[in-house]
Length: 333
Image (cartoon, rainbow, N blue to C red; front, side, top):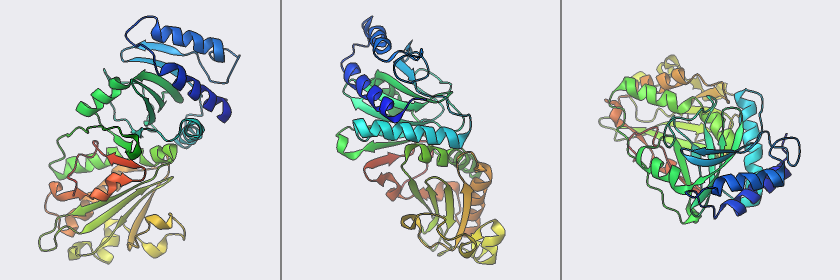
């Protein structure tokens, strides 16, 4: 297994040697792969402990270095990704971009793992070094910065955070959002399924507030979605219809606050809501059930249409990142 020190050394070498690579000229990437093998052993038992030889791909152009092959369990994969991410951060600093890929990628689909698709990207001018979740385990990837950035800004999905101090601007695609309750439920299910695995892997929690437009009540805060090493969803029954209050909230599927164990989540994410669900950690989330709970509660609360569920703008800022959520594609207010 590659150590933290080996990971940092490898990442630093790739960042230095790969920053000026000419991607359109042969043997640019191939020559770099050769120097990598000579320096680190290429996974053949010599040099550092990464798990396989670097692979040069053409579409999209990239140099892929498999780092490790953890057990095929979401919690194990997420923890290994986090270990390597922190080792690279110790050398290169915080990433320029991080988040989770959607199901697509530049020029088509990759063989991504089902447990989650986290990534961190360190932009080095025209070349970017990415730590991503590969099919078997974490991979370090060098590629032209434009390969992902151009694709993402037009059709990308997932969640993306941009480090505010990086000075890099990244436009975010605007996808058509769900227009009915069924589509909204499917959207939430897809978004929540791997969320605690991704936030565990990245080491960056997300805290999203969902508001609902209710006739006569404006748009009160209804739900809080917090994902760190576990996923929690809370419901605030302030200014909602009687069908979503008190015992009726319990009947909808919510757990009273006092029934949850003390310290169930960090105090900075605890807004004191009276109703909660603990949706579980990596690989444990019944995303369909959680999405259904959110949707039926919103309707019982008096939200007239799926398009009246709004993501709070505060979710877009979590120091030191600005976040966007193309996979949700719901109004932000």
